[in-house]
Image 1 (cartoon, rainbow, N blue to C red):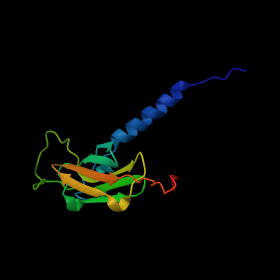
Image 2 (cartoon, rainbow, N blue to C red):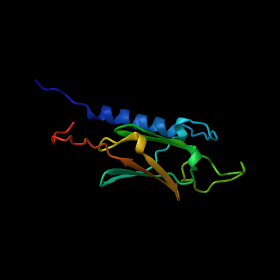
Image 3 (cartoon, helix red, strand yellow):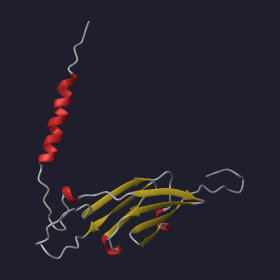
Image 4 (tube, rainbow, N blue to C red):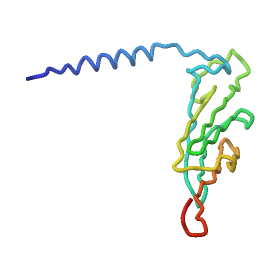
Length: 144
């Protein structure tokens, strides 16, 4: 039995989807939480000793605009970066910086103690210090 495959039909569908996305108009809605304004900060995750560190780039965002949720094995960072343009009569020649709401959900490489989390924001970099959850050994040498 021979099955005929028409790969061109999939290419056409992908091309049609790309064209549809490109044709959408991007509208700036100020500080509103719209999908077109959503951006994702870049992060680094590393561990040292009994701590896991998460560093996120959020330039131009104040500490009052950031919300951090720490759970046992994940971290959510969300907030808003406000536009700094005071005049509506600006003609942009290039606009690459991201504005609006952002959200990043990070799965951690291990379990942490949420109550011992610490956060620092300096020079546009948010640094989270997360204490690893360690199973302590009891007096008989058994873990538990």
